[in-house]
Length: 238
Image 1 (spheres, rainbow, N blue to C red):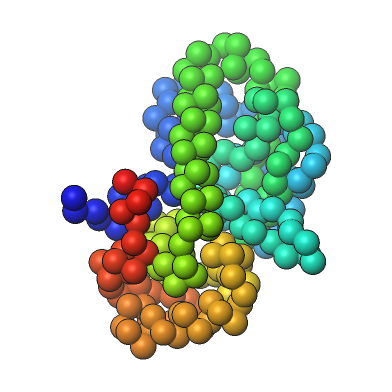
Image 2: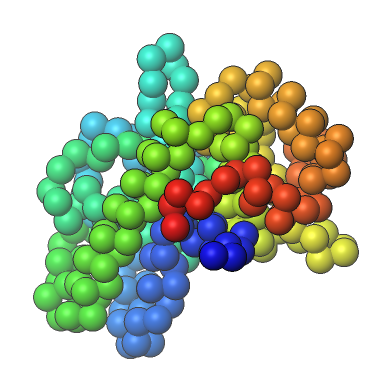
């Protein structure tokens, strides 16, 4: 079976942005009109693990990282969310504490929909309820793939796979040659992969020497997606 890089990324990406965009215009407009919009600076927390949800969030602009706090102040970044994606609705629907934290990865504009307004919309629109439940099921599958990747793959394999995933997440960041630029601190990148910064830097240097990527400061441009796919060795998730 031939596997394409884009199909691999899909196995590790939530689809709440596309699911929301496919809702009828009336529902989207009502949903967006009820939100309180706030600006978040890079690094600012949006919600914190262990607190109780008062509503859900919608990313209007920017990128957000969902992460778990580990011993020694370290982070494991679970997921990078982008424009059009929903945040915090799993904990809200299950009426449980947030199992992770969310912080702005870049300067971001985030909409907040309070509990009472969301419940009114859910009562009014069956399509919205179905969309959220479908997303929950899909995200469970994504998280299963993430867990399997972290526990079973080598660091080199995880770095290659992460580059392919980030290529999709940063597809709106392009240079004058229309090349996608992955713009991420090495610390955040290492926290996605689940490794030390020094190890990540060494592997990125190796990939650069192998002409798989180009590096300009924090910016990474992928040169050879197919070779990265071979290194990622993802046949086990298909």
